[in-house]
Amino acid sequence: MKKLRFILMLLVTLGVFCACGGEFKPEESSEMPETPPNIYTIVYSRLYEEAAKTVAEAVMEKAGLEFECVAFEKGMELPQYAVIIGDISDGVSETLCKDIARLDFGTRVAGDRVYCYGGCGESVVSAAKYLANALVNERGIEPDEDYNYFYDNPYSLENATINGIDIGEFTLVYASTENEAKYGDVAEDFKRYLRDNANVRVRAMPSGKPDGEKEILIGIVPNRGIVEGRSEAEFGDFDYEITVSGDKVAIIGGNACAVWQGCMAFAKDIERHDDKAVGDMTLSGSARLVKVSCVGDSITEGGNSSDPHSMTYPVYLQRMLGYDYIVKNHGHSGYSVVFSDEYSYSKSPLYTKAKEFAPDVVIYMLGTNDCNPGQDYKSWDNGNREAAYRADTMRYLNSFREINGDVQIFMSIPPTLCYSTIWPWEEWAARIEKHVSIINREIAEEEGLPIVDMYSWSKNHSEVFKDGLHPYNESYKVYAERVYDEIKDVIITRESFMK
Image 1: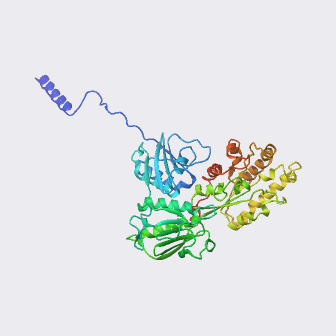
Image 2: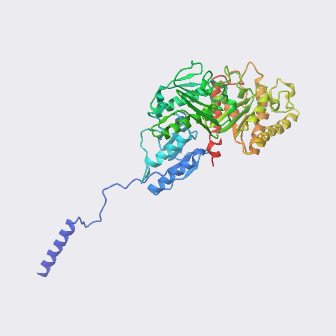
Image 3: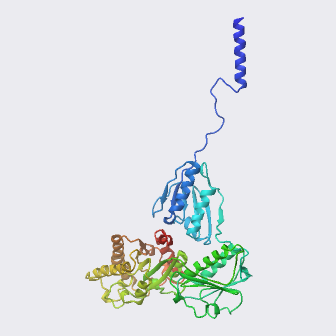
């Protein structure tokens, strides 16, 4: 009886155990183990350290993961899993940043990398913030595979009016200029800005347009009463002024870059009104910009260009750097380094202008004419010229340092000469290789100057130099792209003046 009672109790216990899901063997999960999150390295262009930290902090806060932030350096090997912030010249990021409107930004997934990109510095930062806010979760970064595009709309101008007139009824009329920064570019960019921010399509026309109603003047347009008697010379490099009078708006200043800042100030002033309506007014302002002097010879001046006011490397470089920079062309054709030469750059009025400009950045691109074998007095055989060349190069560099103790100087290694039926190119190229390319590089290393190496690049790009020495017309854009690629991760920024 006791044995029977024990068996019954055992059966009841087993029944309860099984009803509760119990088993005699250890429980095995039917689910696959969870895939661990990818650990990304955040690689950022030098300008975006704070943006990288924003992403890293978001990942730590939401996922408890620590992502390393690394400043990109030339030649570095990118990790497999990387978040790329800004343009790092890896074949993808620079294309994304160049092919997008100034105020647009986005993120893109390419393999195991996520790119944050935009048309200007502020836009890239906005892309990083979007990534931090929208694509980071408890597992880290899990971006969508699809291309994501987002538009940053800082000053919404929809339904804006100027003295009761819809902003979409105005025409942009821009001034002509021989400066590197063009009012026509400002007008086209402001036209796109109004399209994206005010949902209107306005026209942009050159200053030859007859005086008419409802005009926004970009720069000092002639034969317009609202700017009659005004001149760029009355403004500083960073100054702008906005005047609204009836159906006319004038946005003027010391140069096109300052005028762009004025356009943005005008947009900001409109938005601050609850009804986005502005009337007659005058508003003045100043925006600290980075002044860039391109010091050089005919390659800088624009030799072989059919239009040296629009097709030179400084003009194209201005467009690439954007309106936070004022680029000036201080190149003088035929001039050399050594002070005792008949056509020494030290005797050039362009050198005087370069110093009066008091640049924040100097792109120093002299030395080619010192190697001209067609001028006997420029012989390098006895060693005297080498000593003079070294000493006088330092005199130029120090002259800019005396004006601005914080000036950033880029030392160029001048391009070689390519095959030519015009110039004694073989001996010329040999002198550049044997003397100037070495000396310029040594001085750069001794002085801690960043290098713009046009020499190595030119040896594989003879097609750029139509006559063997100079780029020509549109090929100056290719030349400028090389310069831009060499300086973009190192050049000082406008933000550095605001710290």
